Length: 207
Image 1 (cartoon, one colour):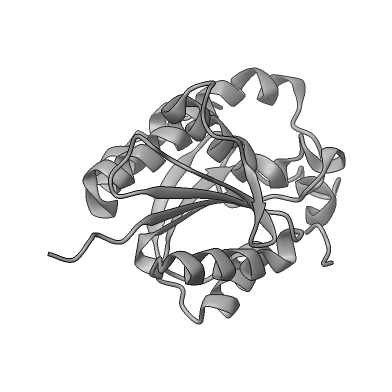
Image 2 (cartoon, one colour):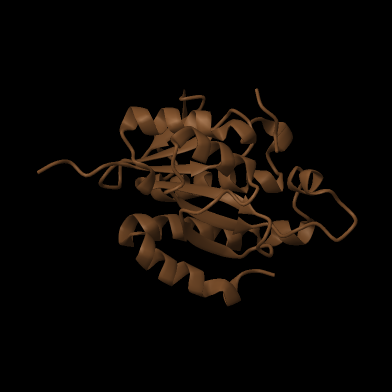
């Protein structure tokens, strides 16, 4: 019997401390917390591989790789494609956690395939893979107040104090979405996670 293909869980963001707390980096935050919760404080460290930081689980079967591309957002596909090709992960067994402007802060939803919706990280992943058939976890960051802030500045800004207070709930639900996909499959996970909308808390370039 052939061995079941691995999963690749990708969190999108920009590398370095300058961007660490930004809305655009919520994908990094989610996958870091999911990996810590799953593997514990003595998990194997993140390694520099595939133009990113890579970790892998020891507690899941089949094996799950976790990737934080370090190529800047608009070149995320370079890292994702390299990791997927090396580990023979098809797009259908790839989960990408990303910030979602079109959702209010805290709303989480799973989506199967589709376009990039103007998100430069997704755009480059689709281009590099030659496929959009991966699973997305859309993590709501909301849009900037009308007329006050450009979108590019908004995604490259820190969360507000009130948003930071609610971040643990957002991260916990997005982390649960990852686990649900791995444990139940994308369709069943969508039924669980997407129904929770009413429970949500109120060298490239970085964007």
